[in-house]
Length: 486
Image (cartoon, rainbow, N blue to C red; front, side, top):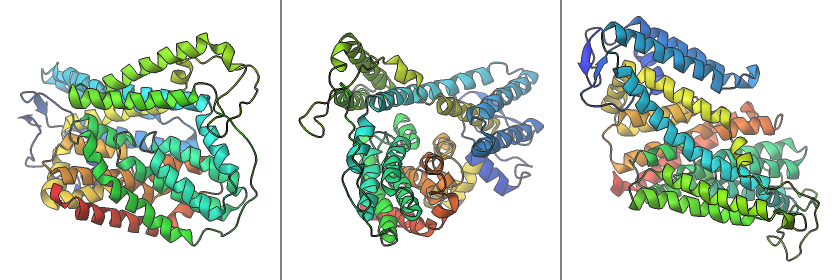
């Protein structure tokens, strides 16, 4: 075991661990920003390093088996995180380096806190809009429109592509799937194809926006790509969605379902909360671009907007017992019964806390493993030997099997020297690569549960070839339209 400055270099026995295993595991274990003069122990050939990898792999296998075990995904990674950092701290104490792990973990927690608070605000706004029937009203409007199966196939796909950059791909996919299930009923063929289309559209739409996916959010908050540069990925993302959609179009039944007539109205304050959400996004972008403050400060300021408006709705709650805002559909106002007063802390409490704590567990686990030194091996293999383009394409393919969040953390932690075009490439591939398999993205996993029996792993796999053509086409279009950025 050697002590080195910064990242450890390959020693005499540096490649004793099988290269392929090192590559796959290290992609899951991002490193950690550190002071340049901090001493680190190379634990890649130490028993603690091997135990750390085993613990993380076991925890991640339990995460992947959540659908079968019903064990929340946050629990195994949180336990693994504590054990990993305890092992690291114990080894460092044996070498008289008591403070290094503490400083590293504090840096890790700061990075996680920014991401968690940002997501918490976004989730709170989305939950508020759901509580006031914003999404349900949209679903009702589409269901009662009387469109045919092919029209609904394209409408839900396009809406998934356009809504996910503002909301998030998971919420968007669930909303569009609800529409498909309401329209398609027992038509398994239509529902299955439409769900594949929604997953591809939601993931593609999230790839060209800083708010559309966790991976794009991480890249933006890291300051590697500025806000407006993400939109250079609009055309490649659109191609990623349109190619498989066009190929699946003729497989969609050319029938017209029975039109439902379930009229749902947006409750009082719903449309104004949409406006406040857009204002919050503008605030976050402005704070980051003009004041050079972390975007999370702007988002938390936006949470204050929602809090004040929630106070207004609560004080004027008597108006909500008489009317709701139906002007989104017509000029009439519907009479309704008593409603529960809006309370901003209710949507906060309904945030996906399991997801937020899962992010903590992943960030802490991979931070510990990255601190052990595995990232140096992967960085040498991928970005020095393979080249940036091949490495970034491989990141997308890996995202279809492993969650793209730890994969993107790994790339960001490597900090390879790449052009803006290459950073946009890895942002694109990490975002849309998960569409290759139904288990490759949160949207796909969620829809397998929501449309159980209609949208399945093998049903998606049947069209993986079409999604792969869209994946390849989007990369080609990126090199074509953004060639000047490389």
